[in-house]
Image (cartoon, rainbow, N blue to C red):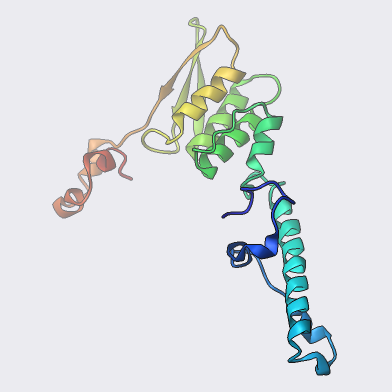
Amino acid sequence: MAYGEHLYGTISYSSDRSLQEGPGFTLPDLMKYLPEYYQGVIEMEEIQESNGIECGLLRYLIEDSALQTDVESATWGLARWENVLALTTDNTKSYAARREMIKAKLRGSGTTTPEMIRRTASAFSGGDVEVVDVPGEYSFQVRFVGTLGIPANMSGLIQIIEEIKPAHLAYEFVYSYTWWDSVKALTWRGAHERTWNELRVYE
């Protein structure tokens, strides 16, 4: 059982050893704070172990809750970010994909400008992006100039752009791929070790 699967307060923490052994949890030794004559007294050791579990849980919860205030470190707290930003919570997606959506929505707040769209798209691509107006066509291009190939979470990017762009504007994506001249620098052995898709985005 992982942290966050049950409503807080509905289960006894000390009854689930898997939580006590999870990452980030430290069981404090409270026996060292007692007089030496309590050492070896089974009843006192049991009481202090139980108290130590509760103290460890409290510290863990405080630290874990603090992590949820930052999108980069949030896990179960991502649902709260999504709720505030009116995003759909999809627990089947990875934390990384959900964080991309949240960061893009945060960057896309306010009046829509090419710079806002550029920042939003950069959150998904992980590299430089250019947004270019197409004169006379009521459209713009999103060009991925800092990364090669198609970014992984394009469906999320499309969703965000649809939400922030003016309704009358159309758009298209322009991707960057490897030039044949750059592939010539590879040896036959080096090329043979890559798939065709890997060669298309070779850098």
